Amino acid sequence: MNLSSPAAREFIVWIFGVLTAASATGYFLAKSAKSPAAKTTVKNLNARTNSWWLMTVILLGALAAGPGATGVVFALISFLALREFITATPTRPADHVSLFCSFFIVLPVQYWLVHAEWYGMFAIMIPVYAFVLLPVTAVLHGDAVNFLERAARIQWGLMVCVYFISHIPMLLHLPAGELPLGRQGLILFLVIVVQGSDVLQYVWGKLLGKHKIAPHLSPGKTVEGFTFGVLSASALGAALHWMMPCGVWQAFLISLLLCVFGFFGGLVMSAIKRDRGIKDWGTLIEGHGGMMDRIDSLCFSAPLFFHILRYFFRSY
Image 1 (cartoon, helix red, strand yellow):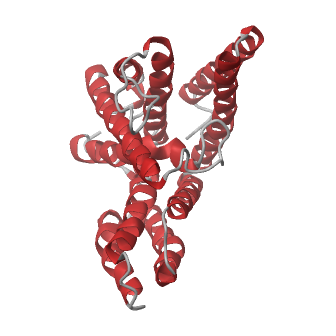
Image 2 (image 1 turned 135 degrees about the vertical axis):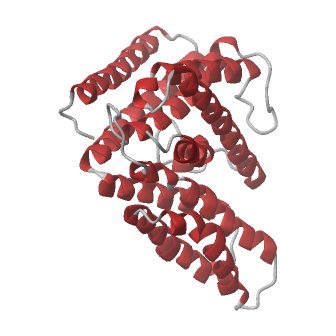
């Protein structure tokens, strides 16, 4: 991303203006909060805002540095997310070779394929070759105890944490077009819409939420928060259509799909957390939990976004 371009400078001013406004709002809310519950809510909100400052700087810096740096950042994100996922799921000594291959062979190779722009192998390396070879490395140890569950956990972790997320830097290798922020703008659009949906669902849920949408999986999510959050984020996506190779209504519909799939991505990962008896995947990001807590909605929306652009907007 060329930071010297007028569009990039305007975008950066806008995004940091939003973060500054959020920080200022959090400061004044902290001053006015009286009850313990209100103070806890505001403290959590401010922690989330502070984390967003750091994550925004890292993302913009990686995009400005080029595809290589962007790939490295998302490879690190995948590594941390996979580590959290595997830590939360039980393994046995017979799985150690499979886990080593997952972290230090499959993950690097997947991101090398992104760098090499080798789409054909990128698309099948994990769901075909890794899925075949990893159970083989485990079965050679002769340990059949919970073998199906153990193999499925490693494969599922690779799909969610590595395969799905690797579609984000792969956006930089779509056909170049006349876009104000270039292909980097596509990543920014995805992150803003999907993460914006999470934030707006949280805000609307706090303001209007009454009916739980999945009380046994994610007690904090409400029908009102989901409805107004998704619609608000979709409207935001429509307003950001200039970053996309499409018009206002197309951007709105794409954003709507991303937000809905992002919501269900978060719900699926919440179900896994409930199954494992944990509240958060980790404590890496203050106010957010672990890396997986922050990217769960992106996991499900990133492949959808990539393939929508690749198959329906190839001529842009």
